[in-house]
Every structure is written in structure tokens, then in C-alpha cells.
Amino acid sequence: MHIFILSGLSLLIYMSILYVFAVIRKNNSIADIGYGIGFIVVAIVSMYQNGGHWYATLATLLVLLWGFRLAFRIGSRNLSKPEDFRYVGYRKSWKYFYLRSYFQVFIFQGIIIYIISMPVLFINLYPKEPIVWLLIVGVIIWVVGYFFEVVGDYQLDEFLKLPKKPSKYMTTGLWSRTRHPNYFGESTMWWGLFFISLACSKYGILTIISPILITFLLTKVSGIPMVEKRWIDDPVWKKYKSKTPAFFPRIGIK
Image (cartoon, rainbow, N blue to C red; front, side, top):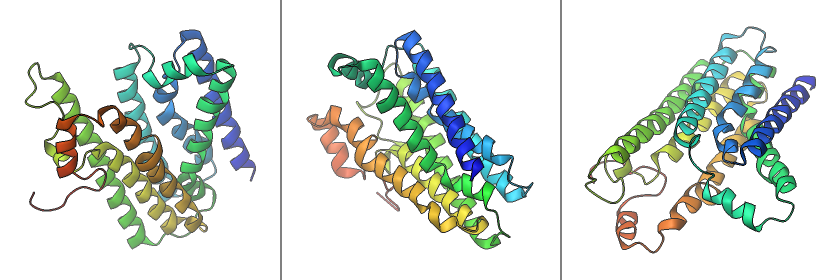
């Protein structure tokens, strides 16, 4: 239990430091850049209690691989840009902006990170002799998710670099299979980590809250709905939307 508390306190300190930087820079988008590193903080702190189990180390490394890549991508893309439009809106409309930013942006995000991190926490803190076939299934699911996120991001970046774009929206590659391959990939990775937890932790079944939460947030709250709201009245978007699933990729011939 003390490691659960220590992991939570470490994350609280990390999110508070992020908040200080955001205040100094007058840019709450730092919360987005620091998001992936928050998972790494929880994984690293709990890793010291995994007893040297190779499968616990594997799960921790998967979180590190995902978290560092995400932080680098968002940081390299957003660090020099103005504050995201969401936070600009909060800055204009919130009374007691700085106090609300601390609790509603940074601390709340820290709570979300902590809950989603449950698979790696439980694998590190409550390991058991692994069910090898289930562990392999979890790793395969994670790899599929990582593929969708990395390749989807790469394809989008290459599209945005084109001086003359063939279409208004990215609609080729993985983006022809799902409107949000990166979100699908992120959710799938945490489902993979859940199955790894199921295979390697005494209480792995409890960590199902992690993939359920991240899937709900991405599909119903802060992911797809927030992104697509900007294009809701665009006829070009409506045509793309009518032919392409929002989340789960289309399988087979189009």
C-alpha cells in the first residue's frame, strides 16, 4: 500500500511542477506535453517493487516506450505554438483561473493518469507466475495498438507537410480505415496492458477499469467528440464521416 501512496505522491509532485511551468509560460498546453511522462513517473516509482520479475519489467518498458514517444511528439509539435484553443477559452471564461487550472486541468489529469496506470502498477506490486499464452496475447494487442498510433501519426504528419494537399482531410492509409487511428491505437495499447496484467498479476482483473476509462474518454469525452466538433458542419467532413468508422477500423476491402 505504501507504494500506491508513493506513486500517487510522486505523480502529484510531478503535476504540480508542470503547473508551475504552465503559470510561468502562461500556457496550460504544457499539461498535454507532460501527459505521457506522468505514466512514466508511476511506472518507474512502482518498478522498484517488482522483485526483478522480467514480465513486470517488460510491462514497465512498454509504458516507457509509449510515454516518451507521445511526450516527444506533442512537445515537438506544440512547445513553440500558442496556447491550445481549449485553454484559451478557459482563460477567458473561468473565474479564479489559476486555482481552477491547478485542480481541473493538472490535478484532475493526474488522477486520470493514475487510474489508467493500474495495469502496470498491479503487475509491479502484485506479480504472480505468468500465464504465458495470455501474456503473449496482451503483448500482441499492445503491438497492434502501438502500430496504429505510430503509423497513424506518421501518415498525418507527412500529409500536413504537403505543400499541395490532395484533399482537405487526411483520408488515406490507416485514416481510410478509421477516422482516428491514433486514438484507436492508444486505447488498444491499454487493453493490451490489461491482458498482460491479467496474465501476470494476482489482482489483474481489477485493472480492467484502465482500458474502459481510456476508451470512454477517447470516444465520448476529450478525444473524438472534441476534435470533430470543429468540423461538424463541413460537407467534406460529413462525406468522409459517412464512409469511415470513427474508432474501430474497417476490416477487409473498402
